[in-house]
Length: 594
Image (cartoon, rainbow, N blue to C red):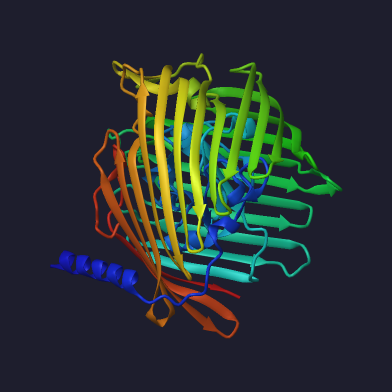
């Protein structure tokens, strides 16, 4: 009876949201967004490749507690969670593996050289994000190795609309989340932020305690970011179902900066980044000496692009230097250095925009030289309709785990070759007054694809000669004042010549998302999120999330009261075969700003 009552309340809430009155003021249309993930920052309407954008208001509407949770509601992205709330996720795009996704912070690459499991372990609080830009497809001509499936660019806020902001969120399983941020009242924008969340877990050995600290400095010519995060969590069946009492402790530090200096038609935008990651893992929580690993990685990079704006087009040229190393009890001590030269042109014609990019990368280990070209173009059929196409080449070096990891059931291959892919995509976008539609077809031809293959009792890292992927994505968004309905769908099909069981090729065949934002009576806003997923080697499942928000105000203090529900139908599901995900989880909280 209790379950039936909850189910009835859920469906009543959905019907109220869908059929309620609409009274909000109009929103900024998607076509007005400036996207910086491409070589040149341009409005969304001028992009010649598929791009998706999640803005900060959407992140709040989703009730996202971490970067990976915000990405779950896009059909182009497969978020395979081992744990909720940003504990750990494998994130892939267009049927690629989690190793083939490139993460950026304000356009600066930030991937972890040890393993793609930690690519999204980025010490940036979710409340400090202005937007997230997702560009599916290969783009090594712009960002070098690693951008095999696509890029995820996290853009941080350059200013705050409040001096102090904060919030508290409580939920089932002793869940607690606290966040606070404040801005110094000085001419230069200086902000500090803290976010912490913890829980006893939704079953045995799924407890966690996560913390993130951030500091930002933004001026006319310089932006600096620093962040530190620490996670301690029970890793129930994370890497093997045989040992449910695994445990892990990670720490991540980030320091990044970007300058902007302009002299007439020439602009120079140097960037730098330093990232340190620490990972301590034990197989049996109460007996750490039985089996444990400690890994420490460092990544340093600097890039100096030079932009030139002329009557003949926009030009870019520049260079990049990087270095990474690892000190590990399991992977040994290893290092790599890298140099790159790049250039590009953006040409505006009557109804067309053409982009050409070329990049030459050199590594002291793994690959001598790699040349990556890219061509893309769009044609404006009308003021609001554009056709686009792109051809790209991309490559990826193996991670340190793929090269050197050994265990009682794993044997790595230090002679792995870089994997490569050619990709072609075409699509159309239509921007109406109150709606937008988008459609993209793509084909990928991959060679020397890196995978873990089952050979007898061992998983062996090796190259697969051929993995080809065909796919399509489509999206429709309707707006009415501040209300919106978004439907998006992705379909994939892969062909490969692997003759052994693969560790990576469990891709998403179908993914459907429906997002509804609506205004309720009494100035209450509601958001419904429905996702349906079908991976090639797993049963399909459907998830339902809901968030209801009520604005409040007292003198100069503004805020929101909210309630949330995740997996409201209490669906039993797995993203990764051995790790069962949480059932229904309810939350309530308050957020304020002054």
